[in-house]
Length: 550
Image 1: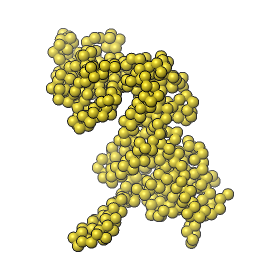
Image 2: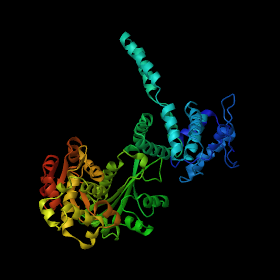
Image 3: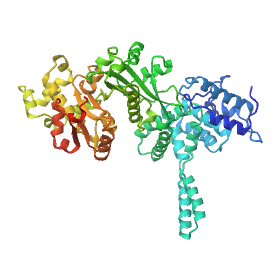
Image 4: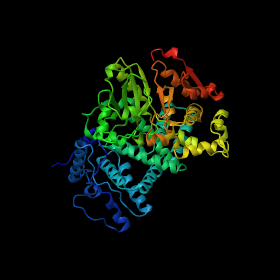
């Protein structure tokens, strides 16, 4: 049993606790509602509210029972990273009730200073938040953003004092007043985030908060308080998940089962249907690399699957439905065929860029025989884009004259014929050459010419081109799965990572929106898109003489 901790010793212990797990909390926050609503939740002898257990004595020490329970929770989560308490959503009544409870909890966590009591109240806030449904979480976050955001009156006063001192002169006073202004500009809720950061599992909990904030802000873009809090939390998360804090690990069949299970769960591109299918993706001849953070050691933040081949593959089923054909020591090409970033709380933080470049260096160091690095990537937005274009009044402009002749049908215009062909996917069974010619050309237009601002409209294209890759080739029937047909009529694309040109390609794209394309002699669709006026301005072609080793 624990005796009373000296305050300094307890703070030292709590500050050094490793950030390793999902935030799991034992105390129930629901008892706070008793005084507000008159309703008493069922008593559970194994639960205890931190508020009920903490007794602040005149000496500012804390009841040993609270210390013991709190430290047991910390130790439990530290030893068992996936341990969770009962975190079922709680129906807590009105929004006003939830706002009152939220403010009382946050007041203890934020206004309590850097004390053990404040840290425990932060722990209690996390427990309370985890038990809320989505609408109630919005109330909690709104209270946090509004009540503990920057105090505009204090900021204005500090700014006026600084301006007045600057007019009078005096460096010493200016330094102090500048510090006061900086303090006034920093919202108190950042202290709450930092206290969560220092708790075991706090990192994962903060990502959950940001995931919720992103969802809420997307539906309530006019709420400036929540938007500002989301932006500030993003800045914090970006620092916590900087490349210097991430470990690149190769995942193998002998990796912890918890990680292997999450590969199956998180795979976002090509589903892994079974453990046997996962095992094939981890055999020699294949590889999986992932970024991990020390605060979330069993949680892959971003991961990529690689297949080692002797040729650039054009169909993903030949990879995912067959065992490896060779060992990496005998290969010359590394193909990145699926890249996933499952943590929604890291949205807007580009881990994939760093991941690919780190993996390329890792492969080069271990297998110098591999000199060519490409992707086999989906085109997730193509079908939706084309279906929308086909329903516009300007749809006829999509087709070339010779394509309209190929689709000529008595009593129907060419666009109607094409729409009928594509609607029920009959063209797949008939393997219509006409459909292949039209769709690959329009897909080339979508990849190279359609823009969101000055960048590629397709999110995967934008990701790889921004990373410094060049467009290599389109692959008809590259993904014949139901998902592949639904996304892009089965078309896939290879992006080539030419290591000598990555930085140059990246600079041209970010600065000018210029897309680099590998020589298109064998791809009529890409060749057409490059020849268009918009293509000649924003697309550059790299010839084969610059890539002789291919």
